[in-house]
Image (cartoon, rainbow, N blue to C red; front, side, top):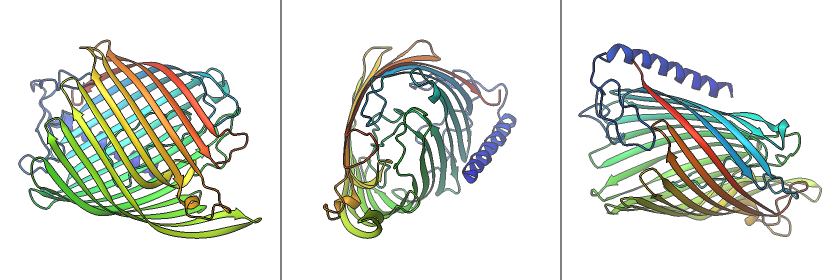
Length: 466
């Protein structure tokens, strides 16, 4: 923990120094740039950007379109919610009114060869039926993109979060399938969750059409009880994970790119109760079928080795397992003038989100977004995931019963800007989980919750150096 906080503090100091440097470089009378289209309110005045891409004339163009000038972003979110049941897998239903007040601060700094972003979000959660469970949550993120040379680029990021929100992750996660992608169907119990994820990427543009990327990741997740009324954290798996890999990509045309690589992941649950290694050999392809339709996917075998400690016949037994399994993912995206759609399907070995250890995950998701009017925007999404224990699936069922759980999540959200700085959101979500042979004291095999909430968000942007 100390070294992770030290890293964040060091990177924050770097951001402050770069902000002071920018104040000396920006002309005070520079004209204001035209505001860029965005879903969030943008600052219409400020210093002129010094460049339109990283390292002009030599950039890898990984940043895409022109970046905005450096700025300070402040915000505040106020939210009220009602849940029909927040007692995850509890035998008794527990309805709950809750309220959240969350401040936000973001600092962005761009130089010709450097992009630095720092974001901090806090939140005071107030639970009406459980006053002893009121808690403060926080999330901090540092992200650095640096152009080492004309062909080498480094990307470093670190994200830490502390949350006691029992329904904070019950929202569909939609994204491109990727090797070793974290389990998108994370089980969040009625417990405090601490998570940290650090990542470093080195990219080398070998030629105009060829790119080599080397990655490394480190993460941890811990559960502790925070409520004096309900406790479901007993038996949940804490996780320490490391991963790394190398991937090569070739651009065949403006529409088609493909490549392949090797990725390795180490999973350690509850300090050695189960340890697993995942070696993934995968190829991937991205195809722009038309200006509005994109198809991407990956596939390849995974080799799994696992060591599991179980209690049978009144003694602890260590089991060693290994197996080759298939893995794949495909994603379809469509973009229209006023609407868009995305759908994805994947199968891979991952972590069980705390409820299980090493897990085989089948995931199906989809989302539809439409611009309802000039000021109204709507999104509806669906996700279904089937999670099966890798250890239980490969053991004698008479000694170790099959363990699994399924998750069904649906969400609906409408957004309306009130002013340039203020936005209102109205949302509804339904989640249903079922479990098999996963034991908690006094638990039920099923859990469902309907949630409705409304939030108002205020943001304020100001250019740095003015």
